[in-house]
Amino acid sequence: MTQTECGNYPCNRKHSWRAICHRLIAIIFAIWIAPAMAASIPDDVQAIVNSPDRSQADRDTDKRRHPAELLAFAGVKPGMSVLDVGTGRGYTAELLARAVGANGSVVAQNDPIVFEKFLKGQWDPRFGTAVMRNVTPVVRASDDPVPPAAGPFDLITVVYVYHDTVWMGRDRKAMNQAFFNALKPGGHLILVDHAGNPGTGSTQTDTLHRIEESVVKDELAAAGFKLVDEAGFLRNPNDPRDAPFFKATIPVDGFVLKYEKP
Image (tube, rainbow, N blue to C red; front, side, top):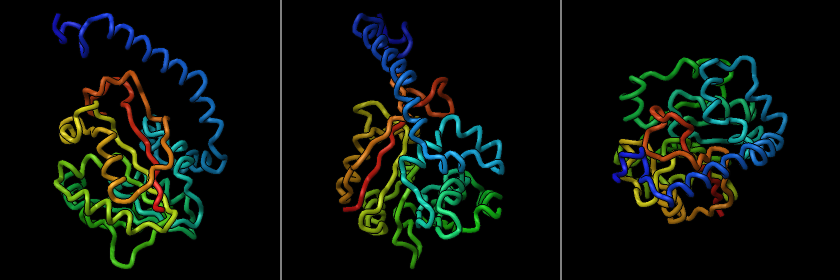
């Protein structure tokens, strides 16, 4: 029997047991782990996500991004200095701006390739709103993301963009070294991305917008970062990892990593 006759996987007993295990893991997560994670979100973090002036578009995005969990995991605090890499239209940058407050600051970076190709050379109108007054938008190549005189940063966020640096042809070794150099000692880097299947490496970054987790871990370790924590709030063991997030019919499996500069 061919693989296509049963969808994404061959129809065999091994796959049946695998599917059962995946379902059991999902049930366990829904019953025990997810409620515990929700209970651990600080009130001030939840208040940021619940801010009445956030757009409906952002609230819709919240359903797959889980911003409260991300902010809590990142440990972002008032007064922090943050670099948001690959900020796009500013969804994460706005959350960070609210979290660091008036005494904090956010540098929101977009690569010129993304800025011209997807944003048509225009920053999203949100960057002109009052809540973003502590945000500095910059257009710089991802392998040279830090403006002169910026930093050092308490926190760097790289959310759903690491895989893009592959198809853009950026020098990831130089990029990761720039991240390391821009962080304060003891500062953290938070990386979120769509998980690729084992063995795919960085070969599906342009087609499925996924990257194998081990690739990211190896590259950041080579830059001197220390992996100090991982979060499971974006994990989905039932994701066959065969579609990009914008075509997937179920939540996409994502990995969330916290690194520290020793």
